[in-house]
Amino acid sequence: PRVDIAVDPLEGTNLCATGAPNAIAVLAASDEGGLLHAPDLYMEKLVVGPSSKDAVSLDAPVAENLRAIARCLERDVEDLVVVVLDRDRHAKLIDDIRATGARIRLIGDGDLSAGIAAAVMGSGVHAVMGIGGAPEGVLTAAAMRCLNGEIFARLVIRKPEDEARCRAMGTDPKRIYTSKDLASGENIIFAATGVTDGTLMKGVRFFGDGVRTGSLIMQSTPARIRFIDTIHVEQTRMVRVRF
Image 1 (cartoon, rainbow, N blue to C red):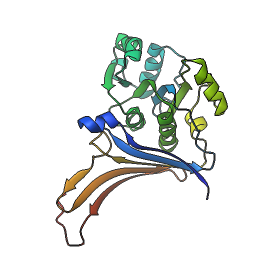
Image 2: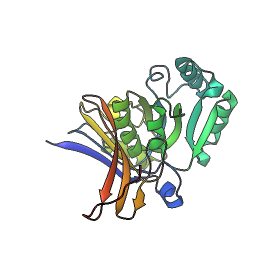
Image 3: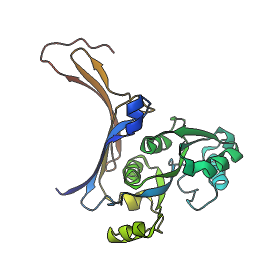
Image 4: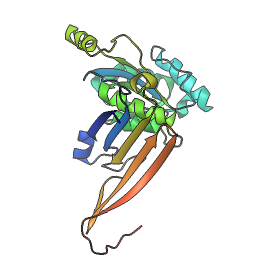
């Protein structure tokens, strides 16, 4: 069968280089035409979990969105944790979030991992806000299709060439995309393996005769989420594994 594939061999290169958490290797696949061919530009993003996806808007003020998320989760705004990439461009966003009393978790890289965490109950992350890469937005959308979360996204146009590039690739620079727009296929598969330890998966662990990895495999039809713990044995002789 013909399929579309979106891949990021190492999402969070700086995280991996510094040993920081949440670096992952990730791939999404869908029916042919089921993943948007996004230009390599920035994208405004708002990622939330299943309970909040019908209550927020990318164009709404930060305070309004956070109040809506708090109502849906039946908690106070002060109890929310919002993940934001630690970038100068987010100075006003950070100020707006802090003004509501919500807590901020600044990350150096890896908004895809944060987006997945926002859609998983118990992860301690309730939303992701800010501007990040558009290709990562497509991968996040594929994960949201499997987790029943939502991403709202709009391409960031900084110069005339950016808009021309969007038009040439068939994307609308003014449109607010959702997960169904970015990952429209009926059958979505999302796979991620931890490179460094993270919120949902352990990183790669080396032992004398092999490597141990933790992976997350999700699919939309039928809806399934699997955590896979794998031991890759480098030699054919018996190895000693400690659990």
